[in-house]
Amino acid sequence: MELFQGRPADCADRLPKEVRTYDQLDALGIPYQRADHPAADTMAVCEAIDAALNVHICKNLFLCNRQKTKFYLLLMFDDKPFKTKDLSKQLGVARLSFGSAEDMARLLDLTPGSVSILALRNDPEQQVTLVIDRPVLEEEWFGCHPCINTSSLKLKTADIVEKFLPAVGHIPIVVDL
Image 1 (spheres, rainbow, N blue to C red):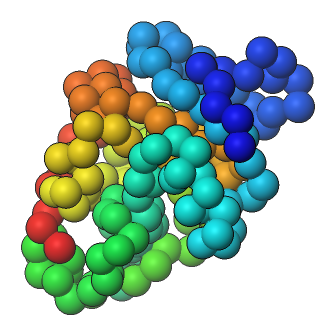
Image 2: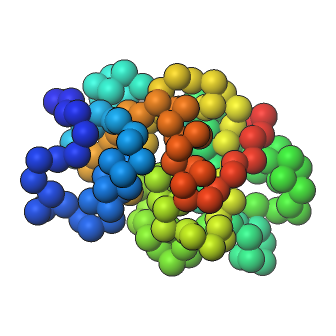
């Protein structure tokens, strides 16, 4: 898997939502490395991506409350088990479940398998609350998809927190899972 600095030289075959992601990162002055790969839908592909980028790409879960009136994007490392009870308690929400593909598309312009913090650029009304498990923020590097699961990026965690999130108007809730 080859590593590239920044956006593809030719974006003609890229989805508009992916190109918009590169446009925003470039406009914010956020440098990144990119790896293109087969759709990241197996652990083997994900492990190869982690190795190529030398970063631990975190698990991104799209969640909602029982009434489907509150939506959450949870970032955590995949070596931790996800226990809805623990997260629900910290968020003060009675019950959490996985959000639907339809809500994900409507709120973040994403499809299952391509969930990414970078999709918060598509949520200017802040309908999705960002929730990050503390260890993710303690890493120097951050790995994620550019809103499509056939490419992955390596960025500085500080750039995500200090540049990207303020630009898209999202303040994370930090939890300890």
